[in-house]
Image (tube, rainbow, N blue to C red; front, side):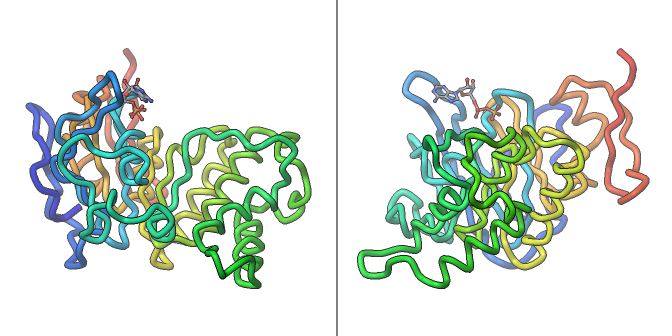
Length: 283
Ligand code: ADP
């Protein structure tokens, strides 16, 4: 998050790391003075944040601070009331929905599958942005769906009705649908919800693999230690504001966790990866 502009800094919250991990590539997604609001509730008055091309950006913050709302704005589902949301320098709202959906894919926090739909039928819906008036279902679409099913470990469940699967399996179907979209930018809203711990890491490793292959990832995660392990760039939010951005090692301090999450803790090196690991103190 090298060039994040105007992130608000509050007392006790570090701006450390703004310069770390900075690349020269232009950002893919930018919120510039974006006011994000629902009909009767303003969530963020002025958000400034940049998602570096090729980054694995993880958004963290207490419940209700506006993480999903920011992700929805980046997914073109919520228009800023004022300010800008830019995709590759263009105002996102001015880009036709289908065109935007070929660049930015979203795994929403919760979705309901149509009754009776099978796994492969639902995953195939991820190909919709690639279909046009004249270009219907193709071998490339089939390959994208097969690959997504493989990556999400669902090949054997391809013909199963989605509503007969467990919560964790259903979550992997939605992941596969997002993968089938084959977008260079992938937004993930709490992708590990409903998954047991091994499947959580399977999925995070899958996203890390996509990231190594060039996909820009923006994920909302609750687990700070997972965030610190996988993020190249951490965005910390509180009450609709971005209060810190940068590399996890620079941002995730005992002071920040105490301040933003009201959790007294130690931050020690993760014995496996060396990334910062939050260990709560007794309260
Ligand atoms: P987070 O993802 O950080 O938990 P959200 O972005 O989901 O937070 O929500 C931010 C605030 O906006 C919360 O107070 C929530 O209740 C409110 N909110 C979320 N969705 C809506 C909506 N569709 N209409 C009105 N308020 C909403």
